Amino acid sequence: MALRNIVELGDPVLYKKSRPVEKFDDRLAMLIDDMFETMYHGNGVGLAAVQVGILKRVVVIDIGEGPMELVNPEITLEEGEQISQEGCLSLPNKWATTKRPKRVQVKAQDRNGKWQVFTGEDLKAKAFCHEIDHLDGILFTSHIIEGESLQG
Image (cartoon, rainbow, N blue to C red; front, side):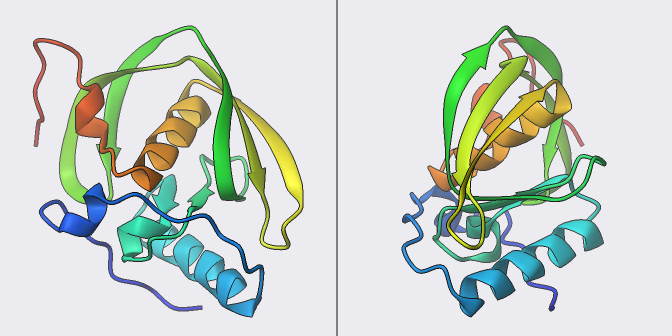
């Protein structure tokens, strides 16, 4: 495993749409492992491949309940609403108050191509939405509630 450099705000790659993963091989497994190491090193709870400069639809998340790897993730259900503080490893030491769904369901593949379904509420739902947004070139700053601004 290796630490990867995290792409920061201002890099145009953050605004690009990531491509679906088609090859489930050792290179994908290495990317996922490196992403976990990089996320943990940065004290994050999620990381999208685009944040390490790779335009592939790959996300890793660990909100303290154990690691989750999501390849080609899709949100299949959104319910409710939560307003809370949100930050991003690509915007170090910045945060804002955002509005996100309170509960989401996500369909995704693992590193071997097997489909799984995840359900998350509160922080987990926010992490799913935040990281999947990254795959479409959307930053959390797009979800800042009216009247609030980026802090830090």
